[in-house]
Image (cartoon, rainbow, N blue to C red; front, side, top):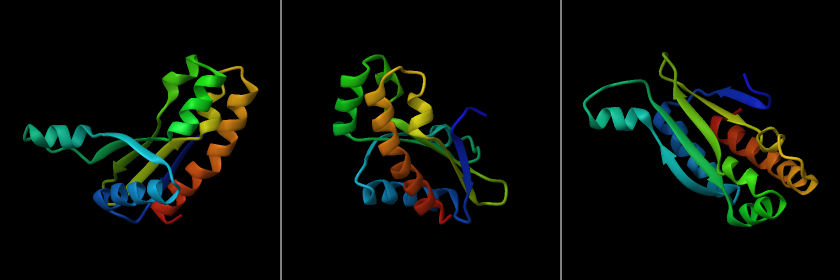
Amino acid sequence: MLPGTHTLTSKHSFSTLVARVEAAVTQQKMGLVATASASAGAAGRGIKIPGNAVLMVFRNDYAVRMLQASVPAGIEAPIRFYITENTDGTASLTYRTPSAVFAPYPSAALKDMAAELDPIFERIARDATGS
């Protein structure tokens, strides 16, 4: 597993956990930039696979700061939450801390920004999963 990766198991179903992550993102005043789901795509083709979705989260003021600190770091944003359906019908949430995501880039300003984002992403994950 990559450094800074956290997986939280919830008692919630896949669809409920997706909705709870979306609500937690809004509550933390972050933006849901995009959502991708292989299971939704497969369902559109008549194929059933366990639920999975990637919710991409960031905010423009952080994007501007990130790019001012390091243009190459722009490939890392938005930061992702990965939701997977477990065999027992519950769902898990996996994410990497912003500090870990931006660690490869040599910029003090970027490290400071990531340190601000770490507790926000932790709150989103904990609020969504109920951990």
